Image 1 (cartoon, helix red, strand yellow):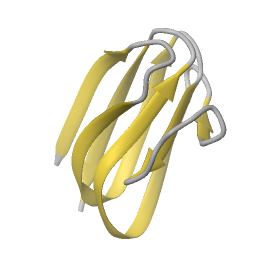
Image 2 (image 1 turned 90 degrees about the vertical axis):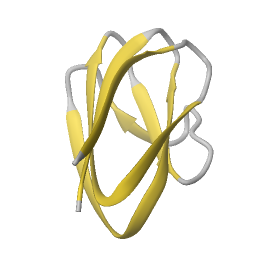
Image 3 (image 1 turned 30 degrees about the horizontal axis):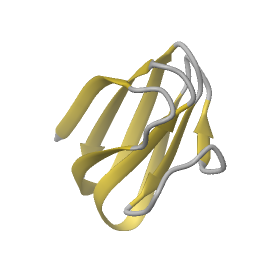
Length: 81
């Protein structure tokens, strides 16, 4: 298992190195977080609202989780498998 917990800089995409097929992203807030896998994240990417988490199981290994937030916010990204 690998994980990352950190504060995102507002309006700046951050690329979190990762290596698993199952990814869980928790948005600890405040603000919305947008994610994409192995590609650029923008405000049009997959939304994770403040206080929510999402687990995505893919058929391939994610090398990088791209995250974007419109305001400074804290996330945790866990990977398994």
